Image (cartoon, rainbow, N blue to C red; front, side, top):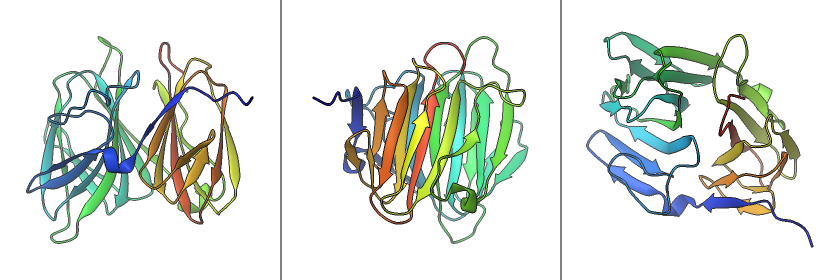
Length: 240
């Protein structure tokens, strides 16, 4: 009998939806006013949102705990406004990580007058009381993602002291990849941005996600062309 790795699937059509005049949000896990008893945090990972913001609209956020906020623009650039009022523009082919203390606020603004923007937003708990506000930008090119899992955030290094690493990959149909965990006690979270994949024997369609634990490597296979997947490894104790 083939041993199946422990895990949990989060289907796209079971995400929580919140609509306001400013945005349309789909939440894989509980976030702000959305709550489901089955969508509790996955260790340090406690929010996964796909958000669309209308032209010239601004959305305000408050960190409920010390956090690393990960932003990945999908369509269009976004303006990130710090609590001081200063601004950073995050473009497509960039990944933005903002480390904030509990209670800190920030805003995300759509800089375009008519065009909607969309982005993926993930929140990972940070260590207290050592948290100091810090912004990091990790650039990449889509060509580097072709048929491989490309490392965007390497985890702990001289440049980053983060409890997670993040990879993106864009695959042709039937192409395979294997991700080797940095730590055996880490949690793995995969999110399918486009197309379909089989990940550790589970079928995932677009915007589905999968959490896995108690494993040393993750095997995935693309089931469609131009299939795009995010793989996040989150340390559950010490840093990676």
